[in-house]
Structures are given as C-alpha cells and as structure tokens.
Image 1 (cartoon, rainbow, N blue to C red):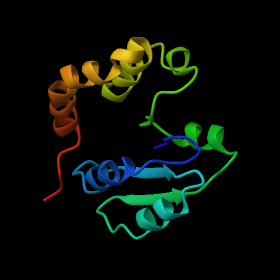
Image 2 (cartoon, rainbow, N blue to C red):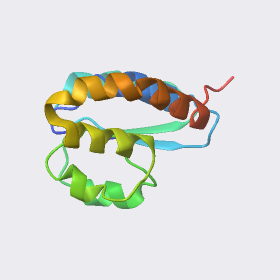
Image 3 (cartoon, rainbow, N blue to C red):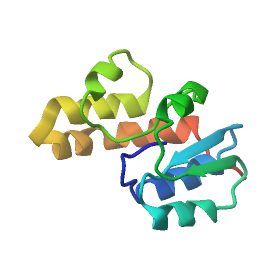
Image 4 (tube, rainbow, N blue to C red):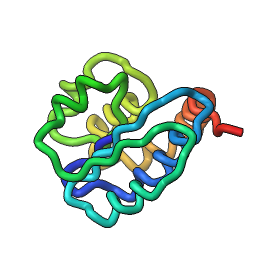
Length: 125
C-alpha cells in the first residue's frame, strides 16, 4: 500500500481490514516521511503479516514483490494502470479522469466499491 511521499491516515482502516482478512495476505505498507503513521501501523497486531516501511527509493523492489497495489491517484497513474486490475485501480482511474468531479464520482461508486471490497476481503472471525 502506497499513498505518496507523505503517506495517509487512510491507510489505517485499510490496513486493519486487510490485516484481519480471512484471506492469507502479507501487507507491505509504505508510509513515506510520515513517521507518526509508520509508528501507528507498526503497532498493529493483525491476523496477516504486516511490513511497515518509511520513505524509500526502493519502490520498484516492493512493487515487484506485490500481487496488487492500493494507493492514491497521482501523476501518470492512468498510464500505469491502463489495464483493469480490480476495484482500487478502477477508482484511481476514475479520480484521474474526472478531475474536479472526483468527489461526485466517488460518491456514485462508493456503494459498489464497498461491496467489492467486503466480498474480497472479509473480516476474519
């Protein structure tokens, strides 16, 4: 999971949900320069293994290890995610393409995204 050079507190609930998913996952959480976020995530105790990293220039290495990426839209994201890869990519592309209408777009697709996420990453019991 990567939300840019400053990280994002949005990572907290996503990491908790995926960390406790019934699926067998290993999470790589890259927090950028956000030391407070890095410390909070490092304290998480979840069913699935979590690796927390701060700012790094090794993004290609971590992406090579990954099966999927959850992150924020940014410059070049449309070219990077030109093929359908799941819900997060769908939202990233929608944010990028709709620009000023991003909030309305997210409001429209949020129920669909929530269903997709819950189906694929159920909470562990």
